[in-house]
Length: 66
Image (tube, rainbow, N blue to C red; front, side):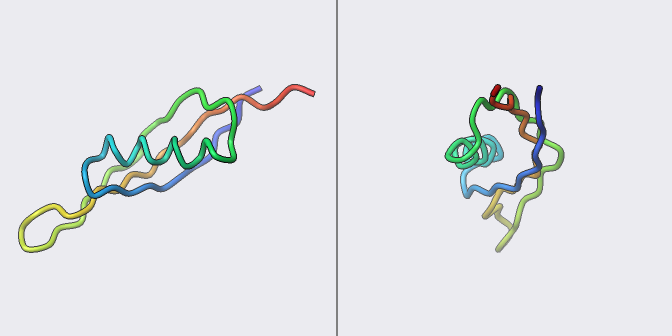
């Protein structure tokens, strides 16, 4: 059985790094992560330069069998 959770993550490097941060952070408490689906990407801008990358994502993981 699989379960899906929604997460938010941020990076000052890239959207890919934000996605990696989401998986890395979630993996501290969620086991058996199988996939990440990026629902939304957003960037913050200061002085005409992108200063932050944000994602809304869904992580799919397998529930532990008992």
